[in-house]
Every structure is written in structure tokens, then in C-alpha cells.
Amino acid sequence: MAPTRILSRVLADATLSFHFLFVAFAVAGGFLVPLVPRIVWIHLAVVLWSSIVNLFDWTCPLTPAEKRFRSAGGGDAYQGGFVEHYLGRLVYPLGMPRRLELVAGISILVWNALVYAGLYFFIWRGGGGG
Image (cartoon, rainbow, N blue to C red):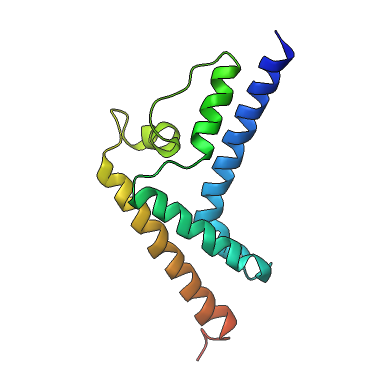
């Protein structure tokens, strides 16, 4: 196998891994904020971006990058978006409806608002015990 194909496959897998970590950070990154307070602004930007991409049916730039690397590596580029291809299939094996993307966009905002509210009331404000 040609070195450029190998490199393309490695880059495709690295892009995929980074995309999964990006999504995981959007969902759970708020829990890291008490440990590393400097990441709060990065996390909020990631949450906002994740929500906007889902709400407005945009394509995250990581998706076409991964597809390009997969094709260059001799693999097949999947159809649709990252969430639809990798995560939506778990929930909707016959295809992910558009309304689920809208629910995801709103849910990521609501979930993180709850996480930050919990952090405020139970950690930063020193509350919880009255």
C-alpha cells in the first residue's frame, strides 16, 4: 500500500477520533470546568458551535475532511453527517430524521445550562447544605 494511502487512513481515523472527542467535550466538558476553570470559554464555544450546527443543518468542517481522507485512503466516504452516520444509526437504524438533529441542538444547550446551574449552586456558591 502506498505511503500516501496509509497517511490518508491515519488522518481519517485521527479526524474521526477528534470529532468524537469534540462531541464528548460538548456534552461532558462542563464537568471539567471546576478542575480547569480556564476551559470554560472554550467549552461554551464548543457547546454553541455544536448546537448551531445541529439547529441550522450545517456541516461541521471535520465531516468533509474525514470523508476526503477516507476516499484518499481507498475507503468509502459515508453519506450524510457525522452524527447521523456514527451516532444516529445506533438510535435510528433506518435513518435519522431531521427533527432529531433539532432535538440534539436544543438538548445540548439545555443540558449544559443544567450542568452550569448545578456547578453554580452546589460548587461555586458553596450551597447545597443550607
